[in-house]
Length: 115
Length: 114
Image 1 (cartoon, each protein chain N blue to C red):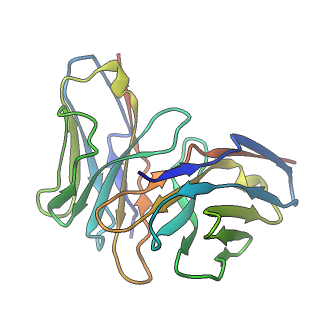
Image 2 (cartoon, rainbow over the protein chains, first blue to last red):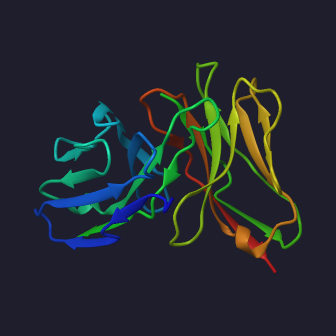
């Protein structure tokens, strides 16, 4: 068990460009979450997958944000036409769900800077 | 919508002393889960302790314990015998289960004075 991994760890992009981030959850976890964390704030929930199904996406910040989890394993988060306000840390978390184990384990995050 | 409030932006404690971080939340649900997460500088979020709302007994994990007051919607974290490695941002989080994610407070920056 190597934990949740995210790539890249840092991304600098120019306004208007598209960016994609990858999250690899803990292997036996079927639940996957994306969050955004801005400076001085707690993480803000964006979207949720159970296996390959995206069961909650109403909290994505705009239609420029989209996420996939094509085979129920890794996930990608894409931001199209980036804006300076998109600069933030993007966190991924995974979990299983049993009576006793439901907590979310977080990855190290991808820090996005839009110039 | 649920809200989580951490009223202490920053707390400072002497090494080996005890400190309590406050958290209140607002919900109309009776079944939910509460968490404290720790985020060291430039490092990833780590779960410290969790509490199921249906359990009356307060959770304990080594030096970390909670005071869960369901009626008051309060969930404070007590850190005993504070260590330098405890220095971090601490986030209180609420979860109803289902398809929703965690709702976090704004965090408390904990400083450990040697």
